[in-house]
Image 1 (cartoon, helix red, strand yellow):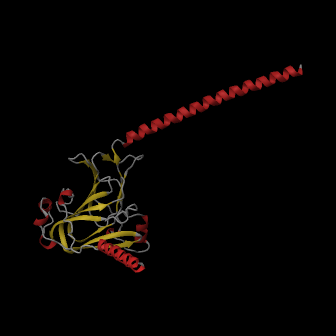
Image 2: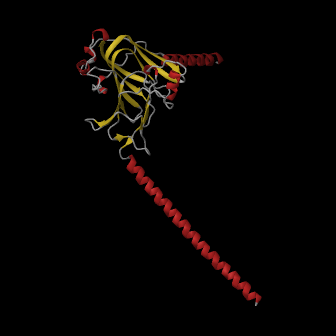
Image 3: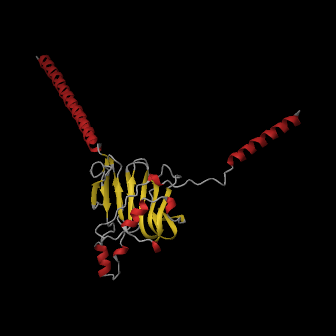
Length: 306
């Protein structure tokens, strides 16, 4: 009887182990999801002051749900560097996803407005396939992601960037580029009490979808006093290209937020006034009661002396 029980227990344990191993198997031929081009807006934008030549352009289509669609329009680029903001609440979430490349080899692709217009209406099947690798590194405590192509390309690179949930966004430039921020419809920024953008953009307008757009044409820091001292006295040559870039920080909020803040502040102020008035009224009543009690004691002492 004991042998039968041991045999049953042994078979049951083998069944549990086998089921566990089967559950842990991972299919090796899992199909990789194809990039979805329909999620991106490929509006071609260029600096009209640059004599018609096309320069690098980076556009961020911000959302309030912890993501942003990023569209790079690059000229003769072999690598795209991204400095993401870490989402502490979702540390294992994929930072960059749904990568779409609509480009041609830089050797035989003219970097003109017409070229990018044509690429913006192309499908993924209409353009060459470029292999790329994703690498990351930590520099001064900040994570950097590098998208490296097998050759220099000219065209459009778009991807979805995971950001910390909320309405704060920061972009740290790593190369010369015209930069645009497109806020979600119904959102704005600039109120010093609710949220603002820094540095001040060169342009600010509303697009056809009634979204507020900010444009920066040059984000390189200007030479300061220390730079001039290094040039004049230390004889250290510091070129304009070696100056760091200014990061963009924006806190955006619903258009109704300042009005709601004003209403909330007014209600809070009214509540404070009511409490203060009630306190002063109660204090006067207590003072009056105290005076009456003291007058009663004084009259009693005077009557006792008589």
